[in-house]
Image (cartoon, rainbow, N blue to C red):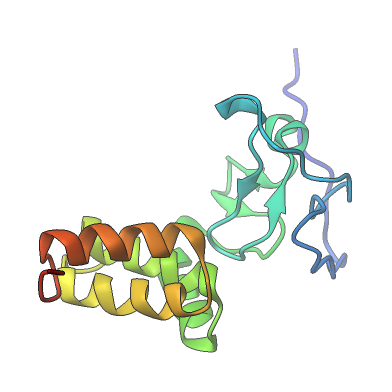
Length: 146
């Protein structure tokens, strides 16, 4: 029995910039009832997709380890996150901060993590605001908040 493959998206440029719609099917992204319902963000390009599109496998090609929305591979995702962060995208700044906090793909540095969390928090990114508050409360990567 043949394994179904995702349809080719070659030549198709996704121009969906509405953060409330799925980047593949343009259906509204719903408020999740569980973890399996939550929208999925492709960290390489920042496009959010609904759980149905994520489960269908049409946004990621496992054989070539490639995002079908931006053509990024696992190897160069950190470079794409850095590029998006430097462009000023809050989601890229937050995820780059997470990478520095964990030490995934980059050298672990709490100071760099806080630097990127601070930039994303300044734009109102909710997860970055939480990360900044925890780091400053504990004095990790910045002076402790009194």
